[in-house]
Length: 312
Image 1 (tube, rainbow, N blue to C red):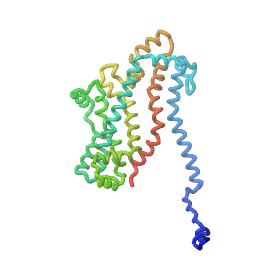
Image 2: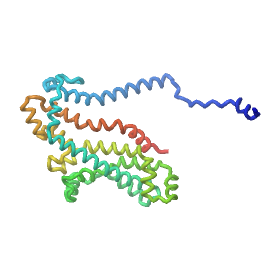
Image 3: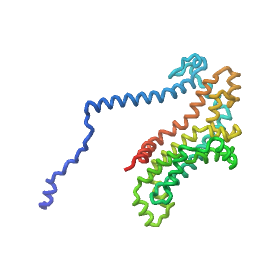
Image 4: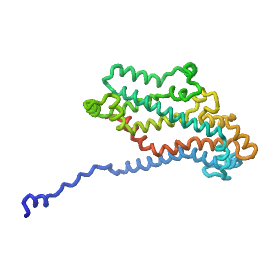
């Protein structure tokens, strides 16, 4: 039996969803889109051109490189130099050192930066302003090269991963970005967790960090790239070749040093690729891991920067 309420429900017209007001496609806005697309395209071209040129040079014969005939396409295609570089035991030793230094130093930096930023995000903390001031002070002033060297040496950190990881464990810019992100999290979440019996460490590990995957991934990317590309600290504090990272191997090639004696001997004997091609090949092999990892972290990179830099 059909009731009055059923008829009313059947005849009731659902309200249409309201459309969000979009950006009006004015002439000025279309001009902005065109100009913006042109500028971004130029930025991409300027950014990619040097790397594509390096890749082309790494696969070209030395005669074409000396003649200046290699631009974006390899000339006299050959992979002999790749075989020479990858057959050098010192290259793989330094490469393994770079991976170990990067992973270890990044883990230490993430732990220390996260703990420091979480502490600074508590506005009720006594002495918070002093702690922020100390961190910001180090952005503009440092002890200098010689005092740092004396300190690292006196602590017995030379020829170890700690000489690379500990002096650069906290980047103040990353610290401030992560602090701003923690401040944007709702205080009620931590209060509810405290009511449920969690202490400070439990709140950080079980509540705050699961909500901070974007900013943590961003910081991992920042620190990993910085430590992977770093060479000066190892140049100062490492005395033996077998302890050097691959960036010093590359630096020696670029500076004309004899960091790759095995390669130089093979290249001279076989009269194949010379110094310019060796540099290009080493640059490609050094930057390749970061290029492979970055696409997987890029979405966290954009989200983490926006969440950590925008407040309110």
